[in-house]
Length: 194
Image (tube, rainbow, N blue to C red; front, side, top):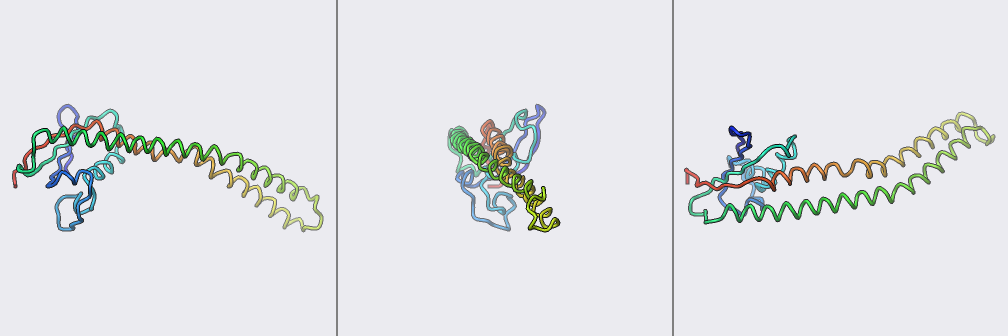
């Protein structure tokens, strides 16, 4: 897969492909192949999404995919059929990611009350131990336990807060890559070396 930028700023991805099914189905891995998606054992779409996932400013750029295929495998309207198939694929994957993001948000919201209760209990015991009101425990041990309970209480809050605040970011980044793939135009050209 080669990437070049034309004069109007469109990123052009050229991919040699023998079978249109390799757009979504990974071919058998072949370490001797010169095609990255083949020697990596990925579908063309997986390879493109991996590329897009690492790029910034995807919303501002145009993308074009040029598939270089054997002339006997090219049929009329094939590029339109591939674009429609990719649109269905990206729409479904985006919807799945949005559903997963909503589930993550719900999980975070449901975990917060339990974490707050645990934090309250931990801080309460920490204050009790730190105040030296329990005289049967040596002061050094009480101080260590008190500090440890403070730490345990705040660490218990981290999981729900991380889930609620940050766990959705990777899915949002995947959706940006999928949207770039969805906007991509596709052209098919006969491969010269066939």
